[in-house]
Structures are given as structure tokens and as C-alpha cells.
Length: 398
Ligand SMILES: *Cc1c(COP(=O)(O)O)cnc(C)c1O
Image 1 (cartoon, rainbow, N blue to C red):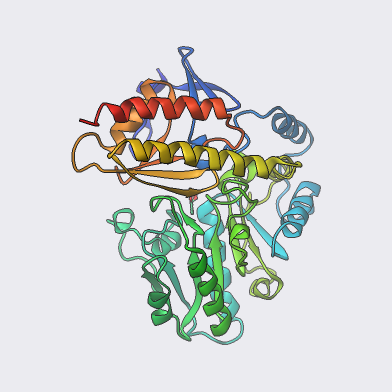
Image 2 (image 1 turned 60 degrees about the vertical axis):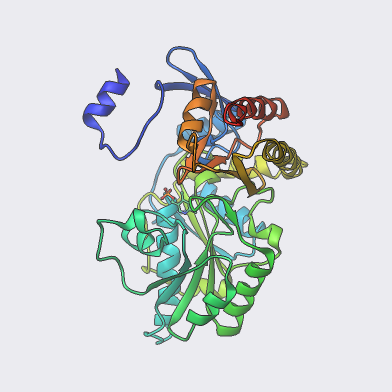
């Protein structure tokens, strides 16, 4: 029934698979016929603590029974405490709350422009982003996104965006001048194919921004909240941005976005500069507070790094065994496996075959398998997926 109703009444903007899901527990999802799936996608890097974590469910229920919403004309404890912990655990001094990734990036873009315009530097409005980047679907974040296929049909987009090749410092140097207010990038490109920034590159970007007084924005919407083995991915590179955006896993599935900035950059906004009706509701921020508490538990991030090393080693052994696998890359539990699709099955076909065998994975550009399991995934579950991939790949060895 849900399938028919969806097909009849919901916009056809998504390709969907399988039966409707009715329940989630940890890294397992259950459909309406009782089939069980092991989730290696976590709702696209959202449910980092797994489905229906009991502590999170309790925090959400308690807050739902106390207070849902009052608007940002008043103070609430969960929003205040979340801002405190996020700033304590990062380079940032201030947080603006939104409801999604695109909105968090929209806030970052607005802050970067207003930062200079408030100082009278009205010609310094350009934002440089990376080719193959993904920053969202609103008009400004679409303008920031470096993938033509996503922009097609929506022209004209916003003025003042330029895109340069990722991991190419000379290309960036060639465009950063005194008309550029910010450089915006993902520490690991997610939708672009799971491509990590080279450590020397990201350090050189920081240096270039510092030397030219340009704001550096890290989009950590997909890479943040422990996904890459540290609370924020940039912490593993030992570089800090001026502005950072978060969303996806911040509240494990309760909609939220956040834009964080250091003290100086935060001066770009004043009373009335920006706003959001729902941004930072008590419900969403109470959920996020619990997520941060769980990720911060002793040993949790170390366990993510251990599982990452194990999973990567297993996937690399598939690469040794099967010519079909051309690359394994990523950071933490955001991992891509690139396939040679010049003959045989595409990545999308692998996704369907895995689904039939009870595993949820994802394909990017039809040639890269993306794995982003809940961070609580177990070694035994990794082994089961790897064995399944091994047998599927063996069918194409010839
Ligand atoms: C998902 C994503 C976004 C957009 O977030 P929405 O909540 O879908 O608006 C932006 N940037 C990155 C890196 C993302 O992965």
C-alpha cells in the first residue's frame, strides 16, 4: 500500500528500493514483511549511533513531553547546552542553528559575504568551491556545488561562485584574489565519490586562506560527528577552518543543521542578520546533545578507527583478489570502493544484489560503492558483507 501511495502521490524525485521499512534497531532494519537488513548506509551517514538507540529515544521522549518549540525569541536549555559542547569540542566560538545541511551551508555562505560587506568590502563576495563537491540543493548551495548534473535545468544560478579541481593547490592559488571572501570544501568529498583531501593539500589551503585573509569553510555535514574516526574530520588533518557546517548525523535523524564559526568570523552576523523559525528547537537540540554525549564516551572514537582499519583491510583484500575492484579509499567509516564497470555489472547492480542478500549499501556515479554504516556496526557484520561482496565479485572474475 505504501509503495502504491508513494508512487501515486509523492514527487518522483527519488529512486526507491524494496518494501517499506517499519522498524530499526542498532544496525538492523526490518521491512513490513519481517525481512531483516544490515544497514551499511545509516540513512546516508545520518544514523551514526544506529537505529533507535535507547538512550537517544529516551532523551527525545523526555524532551517531547517537556517542550517542543518556543521560537528563537526566547532561551532554552538544550540549545544553550548544545552550543556550549559544540564550541568546547571544536575550534568554534559561536553556533547558528538551522534544520538541514543545505540551510547550514546557506548560513555559512551568507556569513562569509556579510563578514566583508559589513566592513565595506563590497566587492569581496566570491566563493571558491571544488569540482565534484556537494553542498546542497537550495539555489545558493546548488551554486556552490561543483557537479553540473545536479545543476542542470535550474539556471541562472547565483553569481560569484567558482569551482577548481580538488586536491590541486595551484588551481586554487590561481583564483583566490581580493574578490574572494571564502573557500569552501569538504574534508572528504562524499557525494563526489568518497575522495579524501590530501593532508598536504588541506594544510596548504589553510595557509593560503590565512595569508590572503580569506575565510575557510569546511562542510562537515557528511564527515562530522565521528563518521571519519574523529568528532570532526578536519581534526584528523590537524587544520582548523574559520567556519564549519554540520547536519546529517548531528541528531541521528531528527532534522537539524548547524553553522559554527570562530570569534572573528562570527562578527559578520548581528541581531537580525539571519534567522530560522525551527532552527535549534528544544527537541532537535536535546537529541543532538545526547548524540554528542554518546560519541564522546571513552573509547568510542577509537573503536570507530579500529573498525575502519579492519573494514578497509578486508576491502583491500577483495581488491587484491578481484580485478573488478580498482580502488578502496575513505576515512573512518566513510568508505568508497571503485569498480571497473567497462564490462560486467555496474555499482548500481551491486547495490541491488546486496539488497537481495540483506545488505544496504549505496552507489555513487554508478561505479563507486559507498559504505557508511552506523558507527556501532560489528566486526561480524562487516565480515558478512565482505563475504557477500566476495562471492558477487567472484562471479565476474572469468
Ligand atoms: C547531505 C549533504 C549536504 C546537504 O544536506 P541536506 O540536509 O540534504 O540539505 C550538504 N553537504 C554535504 C557534504 C552533504 O553530504
